[in-house]
Image (cartoon, rainbow, N blue to C red):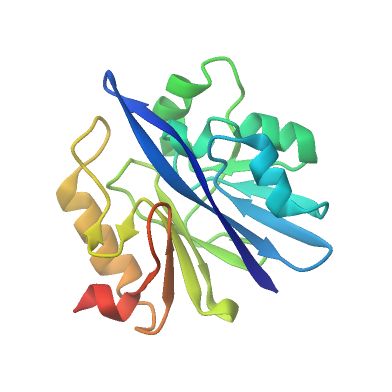
Length: 193
């Protein structure tokens, strides 16, 4: 198993504001098949990282537009199902009003060796994907180097994200590498201190 990574640039829009953002793309698998975590900005750039492998799932940490804008196109191009927590439906509908909801994710579910951790706060259905065999967790916008993800927008709540991090992520081993939705990696131990 290996982790492939790319940074893909685009925009994030919510609550009438738009910002330029750089998103991390994570692709986890082997030489034959893989899963994609989030689908930011550019189908060709995502498919370049996939590099011809069979994609078995497009796993979405949450439904902000910079993480899901091209998810249906990636799913169509690869034939892979999309997965998203059902509590993200209001945000999904802002981006894809006419597209069907992805398949549901639930806390504790395992997909291709990744365990779903429901971590509401940045958004109601935000999730992280723990990969114990790889010693890491993919946190989307729940936990970054230096603290929690943003909570100043619609559908977010600071006390909720802090509780999610404290109760769900800080229970992971301190050496667990945190692969974030934006910016550099960190570790659970570094963020817990």
